[in-house]
Amino acid sequence: MPHPTADLHPPPPRRAAAARAAVAALGFGFAVSLGLGAGTATAADPASNPRWQQLVEHYFPGQPVTPATDGLITFEAPTRAQDAALVPMSVTVDPALEAERLHLIIDNNPVPLAAVFRFGPAHAPGPVETRVRVDRYTFVHAVVETRDGRLLTAERFVKASGGCSAPAVRDPAEAAARLGKMRVRLPERITAGEAVTAQVMISHPNNSGLQFDQITRFYIPPHYLTDITVTYDGVPVLTIDADISISEDPSFRFTFVAEAGGVLAVTARDSKGMEFADQWQVQVEPAS
Image (cartoon, rainbow, N blue to C red; front, side, top):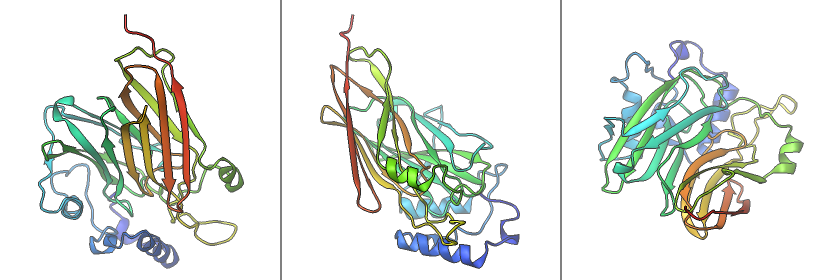
């Protein structure tokens, strides 16, 4: 989120200190060594992006990350987000790539690696979607790791700011009462052997550690989902390693194949060690 005036308006000392403390507490002290609070990259100059090169060296040391060509990765994100705390992201990977993992990296966020999606045997080709926080103007990179070890990327530039410190939408008491509750959206009719697109929504504040409580005058401690696992009849569909850049009340859309009726199960764990789980019976009609 390189903003042309970022270096002219440094954050207040208390906020900067709290941000550093929050990141350090999460084990991401590398943010300082990478200089993530400085530097500019613009949408007009995507080829010259030293910040991205630093991130590549950190997350994929010694491995080349190559821009994808010929529509192998379709990456959709708004050029200008309506809400910096709820920025939709959608990544579709060509099945020919035989993708094993998808890394979503928001270059200028305090913790750039928003999530890693690991595809299981029951996963099917289709869009992977979620919502993220964007702290300031930034490039966002979708990095696909293929079965043969290649790393391919697509990028988008998103104009948004303040998402990581934006106040929660839900009242804290309401959020606590609904903590960990899950919902799923599935098509009304599912035919055996066909790809099924599902959306899982998990009630969780996903506090980033950078949000300021206007009543207590303290920063709200980080509390966010770290691991989400989706299975169908016990077969892995998707596992997600998540961090503070995922929005409040995380939502994930993915595709799987149901050869027969079964159980779609989701388990999640957060940064306080709390675990949540739910499951849904999926009715499947025979193929005609």
